[in-house]
Image (cartoon, rainbow, N blue to C red; front, top):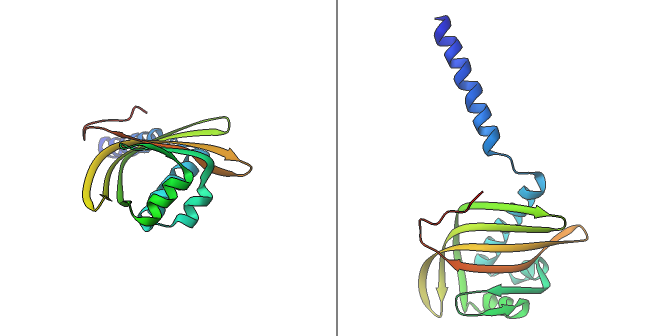
Length: 153
């Protein structure tokens, strides 16, 4: 009986230690992850008012078909030329250096592009810059990848 209780205690302590090792994101990193999740929802909802506040005035967006700036990205979202219906986030990593945050999302994107439904695997790189007290998206780049692609943490 003593052996099984001791074993159970060891098991519970080991599980707590493993969980603590996996959940090591800082509050600032968690904030960037939350902003990114909200951004995907705003893109799906075509909420260009919220996106206009998030996107830095000098931001750039790299897609499979081209690179453009904030105003064009907002127009594309507003008109539905690209409708980001759903971004299924499979993995995320974030690093913060000074006032710059880089986030990598491994996603399956369901979108409507030029009237056709498409599902594509991407690693999306997002660069955020702290401006006063708020984070602004400075760059967003879609990289088409295989479904087995993994982000190094």
